[in-house]
Length: 394
Image (cartoon, rainbow, N blue to C red; front, side, top):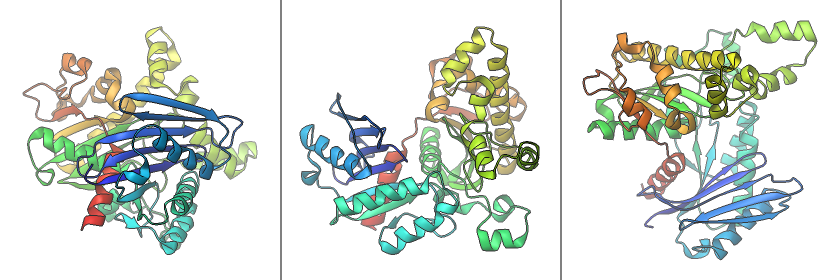
């Protein structure tokens, strides 16, 4: 590895990690630590095609990351001898301040903490990983890469909400967008598949996982995206409602007496496909739909219809698209969702090749389709490592 970067994605009870070359974007080692703080935690470490598992209680993120270091020592290249140039951290919300990766110091750490008001489900967990890693690797640069940064180019017409000025100016209410590292990577790879520069093409990226978003990328720059102030807006997701009438919140508060905290949790954790079908896993939903389950069939229609509406509107926003790229767990693996999401877009220049779609691509449109449709595996960790290496080498 010429520019090894340890990429850490810290959640509230889990830590994902990869050792990635910031130049080639190839990962030599990866792992995940789950159930941190519970009675039994699980560390799964993968290196050189082998999987190593350790089960014991990791009381907190510090214990989890110490176990990660031990796993590198026991299986593969010890981190101390790997030539690490940095530890890179995924941070969900950078607000209006952080529009590029940044080397973390005390002041940056404090700013990330203040931004937790905009991402209370994510930034505190990201911050915990940062604090532990700064103590564990005190001599290495620590870099924060923000999900929101790629969308800093979204113009006012798309990011301003028509709400009171004080909300916008004093409380940061606006569209920020998320999944930025994925949208940046996939839009660039889509241009490569077209044999063109990212600055020469317009690409619509559909990042479809448990969390899901669509972004319109105009000549390498995000100009609109489906997520908003938080990751709740936009598409129907695994447990998130996506777009709803905001008055529903006040209606349910008046009707049931539920607190706003409870309603927030309901829309983020108990809605989406889970609320419609009882399932989060799209594979289970598709199996149920094939078996005649009416609720699953309707849920799939809703899921695909919402994607189709966003893609259609973004073709209009871009004044035409060169490519549509599907990515992430569902986008890469569900031919049924891809077909459903593109269903009636033939009038806008989308001609799907059913056989190629069933085979998984990478190109799933017909040769004469005015818009090329493709499947592009995402590489968020690689993109984080690339941005980190570029920052430190510039």
